[in-house]
Amino acid sequence: MALSFWTAAWFAPFVLPICLYVIWSDLARMKIPNAAVLALGLVFVTIGLVALPFDTYLWRLVTAAVIFAIGLLLYAIGGIGAGDIKFAAVMAPFFDPGDLRTGLYLFAGVLLAAVATHRLGRHLRPLRQITPGWISWDHKNFPMGFALAGALAFYLILGLALGA
Image (cartoon, rainbow, N blue to C red; front, side, top):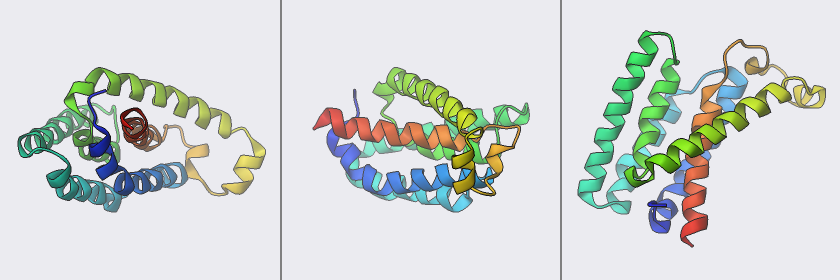
């Protein structure tokens, strides 16, 4: 894994709470708040200056713009929601380009687990009772923020665990 322990250690304390908030918000309201997207972007813009070499930092900002452009194309054809695009774009710079394959596998695994967990959870009465009013339980769309934020969180946690 290309992500260093120290880079993960710089980002994780700030990013993990945002990821948890995004997961909760998307499950409960089917919304990824702009404030969470801005907070995650602000974390990268500020902490990235300390955690990464400057040239790497700049290239990762370019990555965010590319992911945003691809997301806009997917949005135009109805393949993804606007909040998902914005969150994917601001989470992209946290991934080391050397971890492209690992990141894609991680996202695929987290996405499958999130869909299975969500689809099972919607049928569990005790879970529904402690989460009254969660829109995602009865919504036709899947709350993709659950998988996106989960993948970013797991990626940073792996960086901490494997780099220690």
